[in-house]
Amino acid sequence: MATDSKRCTATRRDGAQCSAQSLPGEPMCFAHSPAMAEARTAARRRGGSNSAKVVRLRGLVPPRLLPVFDRLERALADVLSGDLDPKQAQAAASVARAMVSVLSSGELEERLRRLEGIADGNT
Image (cartoon, rainbow, N blue to C red):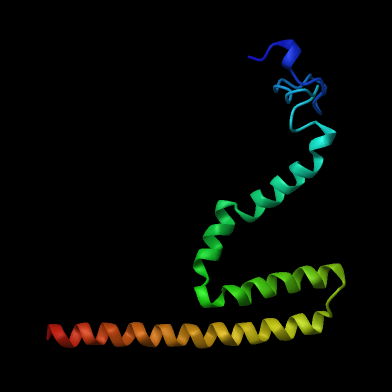
């Protein structure tokens, strides 16, 4: 356990003293230091975009559709911030749905042909 001289001087939300070690030359730890506020924000952003769930979901998107996914994600943020007309975002989403449908049909057709080829080879 950290000694009191190296312990963060901040108070936690529950009123107890923070037990984390303070940063070198600072009285507070990374989580409480006002000087580290930007670094904490950047770390939270990186953490959110690199979370296992997000990485798994992106892994389900066919690689050539990743740019489409990224643009739709930006479009959603732009709609929510008021920078993009919802009708434009809806049109983009409709086109993206059509692209996914065509791609899915093509992949299904390819798998079916492969399976039929295997079945023909085994008869």
